[in-house]
Each structure stands twice: as C-alpha cells, then as structure tokens.
Image (cartoon, rainbow, N blue to C red; front, top):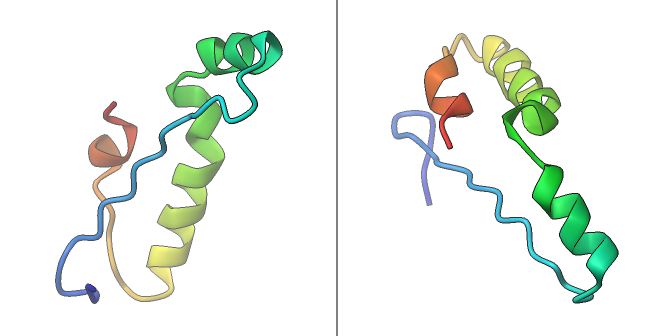
Length: 61
C-alpha cells in the first residue's frame, strides 16, 4: 500500500490472453505513444492534488 508520500509504480504488461495471431500482431505494434492517453490522465489527475509527475518516468520503458 502507498500514499502520496511514496511513489506508486504502474507497469503495463501486454499479454496475449487468447493466444491468437491477431492479438500477437496487435501487441507487437504497441509502443510508448500507444499509452500516451494514460500518461496524460495521470498527469492531469495529479494536478488536482498539487502533485507533480516526472514525465520521463512515465515514458520510460
């Protein structure tokens, strides 16, 4: 458990749950830009709590 005093790291692991070729192909094209809306969401939500987010940490991968 964490609070705003300590970092909470969120990691996304694309998993081919149905073991299909279509899903594998989709996973293969995922890149950092695919998840940019999530980055923007967290950054916007953090502002409401007067909390800053290191943009570089969000984009590392």
